[in-house]
Image (cartoon, rainbow, N blue to C red; front, side, top):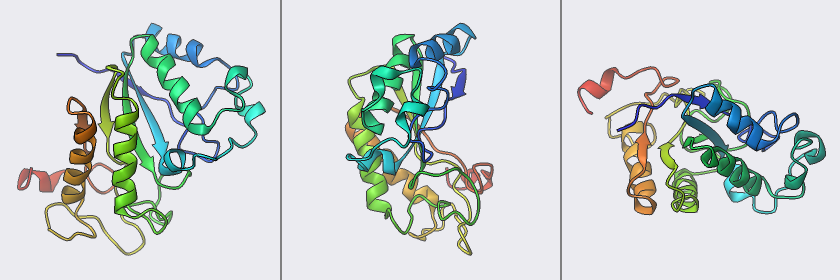
Length: 209
């Protein structure tokens, strides 16, 4: 058993498509600092854009990767690979976090990203993205957890539910699908499911765990 003390290293889910601070320090320097400060775990958010945009080019790569020149010219997903490997090389457990679908900052009621599916990425694309990322790192034992979606919340006039059986709003049903998709690729993965309403509402779980 292991008690996790995690830090969130965000940025790859945003339009820049790489983690923050790779312009000032190498990925290895940042990973070493995280471990030296006493953390044993890193949560790495990603977008579905990062997963599926194989031909994507990192915007302004020479600036956002200034301290990591060896990564310039690589795809966003390859930079994600290298950053993740830097973390695990220092003995840091990695929690993958499916943060948003389209690369963007999170979170609001009007950003179109409140549910696990969007106009651009339907539920099946979300499930496929989970499966692809779980499979990609299954040979790295330090990639131990998967946070299925960040801050499920109202989107426009639609409100997420838990345990209602409504296929369009029931995060309980969707999370089960997502967990099964991840575990089909990596049976030992720790599955993390947040509550609804920006991740803070857990009341319904008492009646339908």
